[in-house]
Amino acid sequence: MSNLAPGSTHPNATATWCCQPLGKEELSAADSEKIAVMFKALSDPVRLRLFSKIAARPTGEACVCDIQDVGVSQPTVSHHLRKLREAGLLESERRASWVYYRVAPGVLSAMAGLLSQTT
Amino acid sequence: MSNLAPGSTHPNATATWCCQPLGKEELSAADSEKIAVMFKALSDPVRLRLFSKIAARPTGEACVCDIQDVGVSQPTVSHHLRKLREAGLLESERRASWVYYRVAPGVLSAMAGLLSQTT
DNA sequence: CAAATGATTTGATGACTGTCAACATAGAGA
DNA sequence: TCTCTATGTTGACAGTCATCAAATCATTTG
Image 1: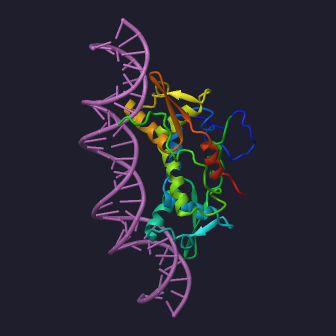
Image 2: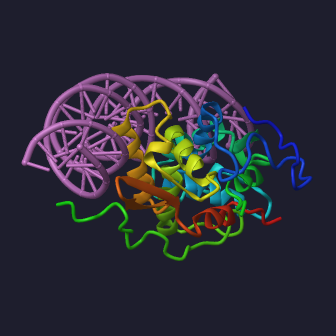
Image 3: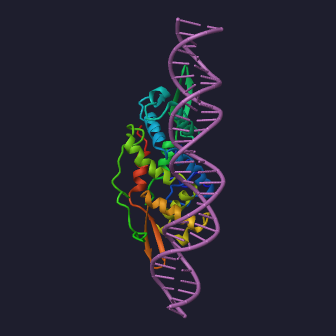
């Protein structure tokens, strides 16, 4: 399993959480399993919209009631948010009656790093 | 039948891409459908490995015979390569007995742009 | 406590997906 | 031609997934 890049080009601490960019070095079977989980979490249009709605908030977080308008029932929204959380893309926290979701720190840059150009 | 030589590219293959970074502006329903297709193509561990094996080649391309060792049967490899091609992530071309796959131009940077940090 | 609101879980169902065996196709060479 | 090698396609099956309705949980308020 590849760890931190030995000659990591950018000193961004949280950037590489597992692997070299896809085009730099072949993924191991174990790493590909791990990464596929995150891509799979974003492979559904509804989840993609929910994730974007949260990520685009100026505060960086949103309660479920703020983002329910995606064309599916509320239990389905809850189901998708759970998947995003289980994939490590979101974190959630209950405050009073509401549950707030935010993008987990580091995941955006980590995924972007995976897809970064190496040539 | 046999209309498409494996090299033929789909019309929507690498159309100029659509969107602001995920965290900058909410995705529309239409855009999220479009983008989810590409994430879905990378949401399978076997496809991720195949894609990485091709992208990591110094030449930028690989014939099927070079990347078959991913733990599934050859028809399954062919099936996954087809999905990656249909999603616009790969292009293919037959040369003599072998079919070569390469990463479609622009897709890596397009996806990386979607995930780029905005803060 | 009881009612109301916000969110999650459960159960069911129809659709989709990954996989392989078998078959088909395309080119190279004898 | 015919055979061999390299890939792609088809058909079938088991497993997974997205969705909703109904039930349940958590918190606040009357």
